[in-house]
Image 1 (cartoon, rainbow over the protein chains, first blue to last red):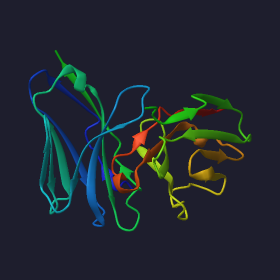
Image 2 (cartoon, rainbow over the protein chains, first blue to last red):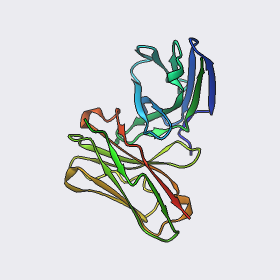
Image 3 (tube, rainbow over the protein chains, first blue to last red):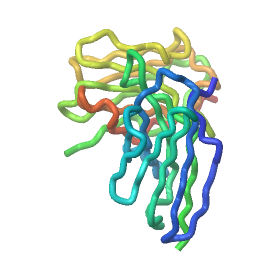
Length: 113
Length: 114
């Protein structure tokens, strides 16, 4: 039972353009959502998060949008840079154990110069 | 300062053997987490320690898996009687109590069961 899904295994974008990564969830108990970035041979690093009381959170080039009715969130990267090339994981938390993150399968983003 | 460290970085073991994986969290972090990533999959939660509270073991896949955290710092994940399906990258993370969402991950231990 995949409670957090990233349906696009990969995304290729030109440098300077927008990257949009999508994530869907099924568990209504989730009320906090996160994006992590992972480079090869390294552990994931926290990128940005959003609480369910908001529908948008922005940090520099990164913006996360949350649509609770659709149980959908997206990460926008503008402008995309070659250094953004990595695997991006969507994660969710909620209920009684907030530290327990449920991750999606990841999307490989490639930004071409 | 030093990040989360894990050892060994790679472990190859024969089916049926026991293995121990070690995690050294960031100093001062009260929460420690174990996840695993199987090939082509996302990260799967295994267990979560928060201070002196009872750990959340809800993600451990079977009773062959156990973990302990000594002195609120170093943690060891033990897998008994390893099976081929245990092959994965085992990732440890730590965080501040109030910063649970920003988990700092180590580089992982790649376990291969032959």
